[in-house]
Length: 292
Image (cartoon, rainbow, N blue to C red; front, side):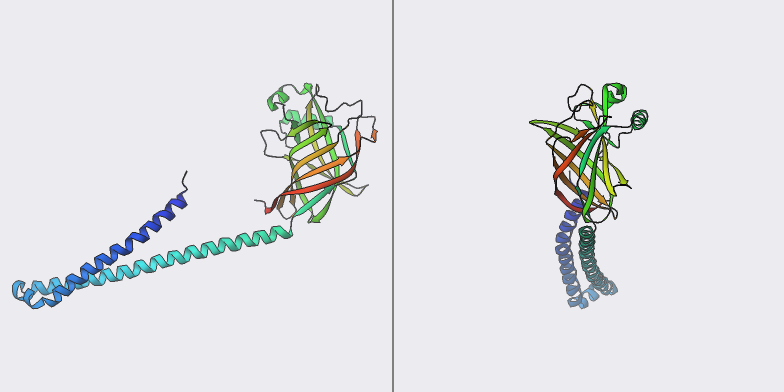
């Protein structure tokens, strides 16, 4: 599908190529007629009396008008060219300013310490079901969102909490997840954003006691899934998180974080699994951009 701007640009190029030969041709014809009228002015005066002089004057006036029109057209074309050059220069300058701003005001985080997986608060589950808002939730990839709302009792609701720190850049404003994958031996458990949303937003919680920031995302699985058992230790080898980090100044970074950890060190009375993170790395997917 052709864009209007592209069509207009091609039309202006063709118009500029055609108008100059046409104006030159008309000017040559008018100049020739005016020259002939001046050369044969006496003969025209004898044959047509005063009308001949008037005809010659009219042709000369039209020639003057044609030359003035051609000159004005050339000025107009020049001004349009200069305007386009200025617009292009301004767009380049604006893009450069945005890139310069983004390159100095982004945020990159690192997950650290211990990851917790525990049952989601029943209060938030009820709010999630009644309001039908899945902004802070991710669903296992084979779950139907409508079936979830129709039969909420068939699903298990968990929360994932991971401490993080800013290792480079400015203070974090928001963190969103696009995809979340747990690996257990050779099997992967994939969690995705509900289809009604573009990305899943995380809770950002600051712990006054540990002085650490935490990211919290809720996940939903069928009760028939072997992903998580509340009464036992659930072993995973790695977690891969596709996420977006937006700084306090509105610069967005898109990347992938991989967490490697040991088996849960402990299982709490409420079914919480605690995982010690041995290492974590962050891979940048896109360059920092100013969010709109």
